[in-house]
Image (cartoon, rainbow over all chains, first blue to last red):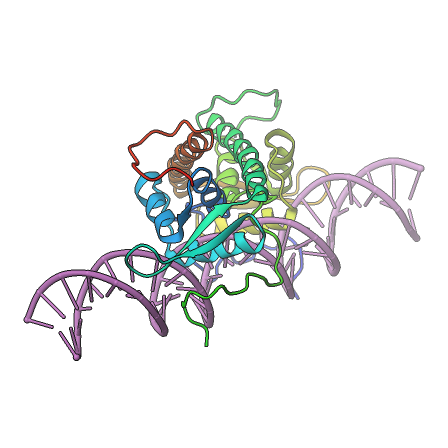
Length: 139
Length: 139
DNA sequence: TCAGCTATATGTAAAGTGCAGACATAGGGA
DNA sequence: TCCCTATGTCTGCACTTTACATATAGCTGA
C-alpha cells in the first residue's frame, strides 16, 4: 500500500529525462506566434512556417502548425479561403478576425507577464534578487 | 475518405477553447523554477511552493510541485532527506547536486533564448519589426 | 476528540507537441 | 509518357506536462 509515509523509498523508474529544457517552443506560444504573424499580412500555413523558422528561430513541424491553424479557425480567431491562383498546389490563406485581434492582445499581455517572470528568474539566478527574506542561509 | 483536397470543409468540433493564453506556467518552466529556488537554499516542497506563489507569482498546485521534485530527484538533479526536527509533519528537504547546477545553467541559457524570442514577438506586435521582407502588404 | 494547518503523494484527464506518414498539385528531366 | 522533387495540407499516434481531485499523516489548540 503506497502512502505518504516518510520512508527512504526508491527514486527510480523508466522515463524520459526532463529536468532539462525542452527543444521546441514552450507550450502554447505557437498560438501567439501564429496570431501575430497574421497581424498585418494574409498568409498561408506553409509560408507562416517558413517565416517562423527563418526569421524568428521558431522551429515547429508542419503538422503542428496546420493543426493549430485549424484550431484557431474553429475558435473564430482567424478565417481562411482557398487560393489556387498561384502555381503549385492550392493554399489555404488565413486572415485575422476581430476576435483574433482581441486574442492577440490578450496574448501580448500574458507574454509580458511571462517576460517579467523570466526577469525575476534571472535576477534570482544571477544573485541580484533582493526582497526581505530573513531565511537561514544555505548550511 | 478524408484527404488534403481543398474542399470548403467544416471547421467545428467539441473542444476546449485554446487560442487564448494558458493559465499556469508555460511548459516545463516549473523545472527551471524549482532548480533556481534551490540554488542557494535547501528547501522542502511546501516552502518552495509558498515562495513561488508569494514572491514570484508562480502559481501551481501541490501535486504538480511534489511530482516535479521527485522527477528531478530521479534524474539526479537534486537529492533529499527527511527533516523531522521542526514542528509539524516531517519535510523532505532538497538540495541541488552538481548535475542540477549544470542543468540550471542549461535552463538559464534556454530561457535567455526564450526572452530573445519574446522580444521578437513584441517588436512584431508593436510594429517595430524591420528585416527586408518585400512581401505584399495586407489586402 | 476534533477541526485545521502543515506536508507529501497518487490517479486521472485534458491539452500541446513531435514524429511519421498520407495525400495532392505542379514542374522538370529522361 | 513516367518518375522525381518541391510545394502544400492534413491525420494518427505516442509522449510529456499540467490541473484538479483526492488520500494520507503528523502536529496543535480548542
